[in-house]
Image (cartoon, rainbow, N blue to C red; front, side, top):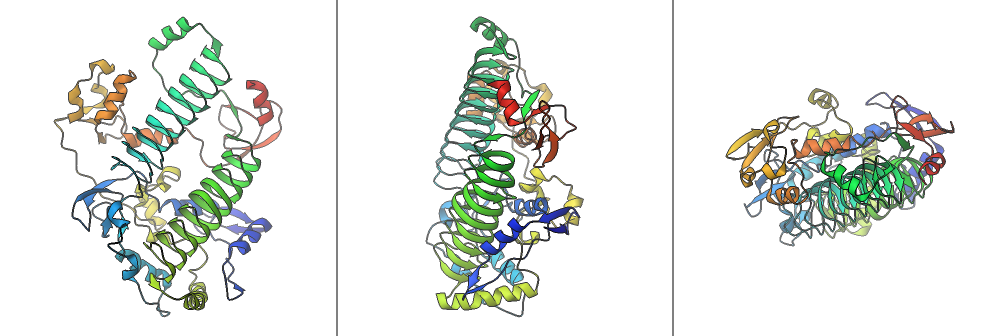
Length: 546
């Protein structure tokens, strides 16, 4: 085991024999020679922070499409000096990123050459395709009538959510799968008509509850299985349930007893939200994965380290941010259906590319220039050697290449820092302020009527001042319709603040050593030993609720 000190935060971290074996496994081979990846200089947290600073999910702006001149919604603010196309035009054959190619120059830094190329190649305004009436969504596919949803697929009539999958009529919720008519929920699956529900599955008409399985008509309950008509874990009549429901308001419930980890059906797995996986280390939100370390939000992957937001049938990759159906890739971001990419960004259906951006259906390219297979395999080792000498080839893109301000990105959710701290670490920062919405009036959140029946239709023409940030926000028609249908009050917080509130309901991505509060067995958990929850190992927890 090799002990190292992070060059950014000075934290100590280790490189194990398993790590070294993986680095050798993913190191590229050209002409029978392996070009070994050396061990990282940043700790796993700082490596994750750097990757996440390349992913803007929720900061959306109005700007003009550089091709058509029409107004579009974009994740690139108008003050950013990029050529930006709407998604439909970007995927068309009317332009080709290969036309922006750059000749190789061994007298210059290759990452600087890539930076010049990146500034000239048009960017896609949003990472969304195959949607219908979803212009205010990002990183979404096959959705319909959605608004400000992120990372969602096959979802309809939903607003203000993240990772809403195969669901409909979902508001203010994160990580919902095959659900319908749910509000302000977190980590739920196959639930129907649920409100403020967390970490639950196969439930209906449940309110302010958590860790329920196959439960129906429950209020303020936790750790229940196969129950119906319960209040605070006590059996009640249908009449008692309905009376209590009519006379109480609801919010997220804080558990008294919790399982040390969220997840199931996994072997040799550490961290949190790990399902049907094997040999997972220091990772978070892994579904159907194997041999994965230091990674987050990964589904159906095998053999990868230091990857974030990667999905479906991918293998042998290292330091990847956002990918879909890819294999044998290193140091790349936003690559879809790609194989054997090195230091590439925003590429679709490509293979064997190095230092490329914006390419579609290409092979054997360097700095977006087309080469033959023989030329590519001869030049790439020389470029790698040159980058090694310049200390460029051995880690993810430098943060200066991110097109976003740190405060616009996913990094700021999991590693929040001030503008001063960000700039000290060489992160970008955005000062852009969107224009104030044109409205009839601005209403302070504390002046809102408490009952939805007292809200006039004219609220659609108002701006509400968030009770936390004072940032104005508006109510949209489908949102108002949902509140009225489900007898819910108008929210008093900006959608961004509501999202952060839900993010903070999940434990930080950090492991602690502690003991099961029942059997005293040693466990690794994301629950800080200083917190008040009673934390059980899996065996003790299962005895408690089943």
